[in-house]
Image (cartoon, rainbow, N blue to C red; front, side):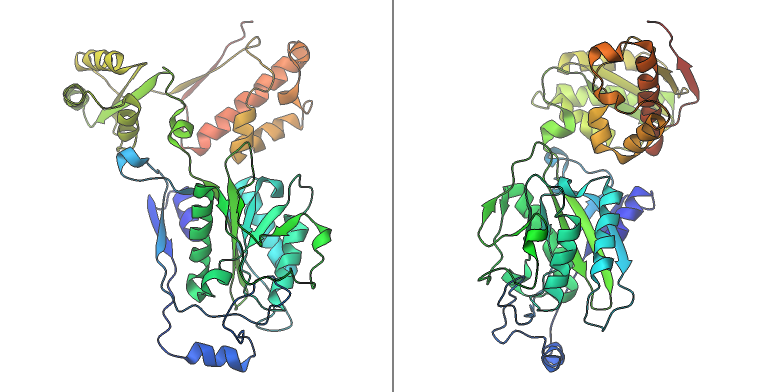
Length: 422
């Protein structure tokens, strides 16, 4: 999953399928684990429990998850179940044995995944742990979680492991945890971890804000998207950590349908092709009065773009259809992209805050400018921000960050321009 997301974000592919499968056709795995005294006598994984006495292998087959760089909602064929916000992989390095995990390495992979996601530990609500139910591995993992996620939190991190429900599915254990967390975020419920009489006393649970989920609870109330992380640690020493974010609902993807304008994009290899496509689109929509303008816009935006393009915008169906008629009568050719940077007088307290919180590229560029000027420009009150010595650096920081964000999406202007009007 980590490699799939990396390939998508770097344009190496437009869709990736990642998954894991475990098929146990012989008793060899049980025999080898039994020789190491690694199996629970009753076959149950008692993850993070004081009664933990070994793992239980799950003879299951699990499928995979598909992840797309350009997800689409139900109306266009694909439902966005979750977003891979960030991920990281590392190697344990030296330890005192093949089956002994390395706590500091686990802390590092968690911090790397959070940095990749542009998040702080407090931005994650639940962690689906590796949690095999062993007396050695579980305490080491719990202490790593306490040292990373458990600090400086307003409410505790919730901790669990699907291995208590279905056993250790080995090569499919990671994707099983991903599936569990995606479903949990969608239903707003954190399932309980089974077979726990009390949390293991081998862990200093008071050293941080981490709570083992021993009974089903509602997802913590947050004023942002729900987030969960999933850990998967291999016996060879490979550690993987993925941060997931709840998939956006329609209102989040498109904005509430409150009369705001909707864009429709048409493109072709020739100007005549653009006009012909506009004609076909207008006829198609006129024959289907039940179509929502925003759904049409989303479907058009997901199509390939050619050199000749036109974009019509409108607040409703009739306005968009009228604009399509204008396209049919005009010759449309590809033009150069220009960006206009606003001048003093457009500043408002908190401008850009939403982008800062969501997009790491925006935040990094904004912080780079603020390191030279006065910090806290986004939070300045209206009276202070109206002064020139604050307004101009604040606008400059905002515009540089916007430019870098667009640049990260592959949008580069040929012409920049600035306005100095107040």
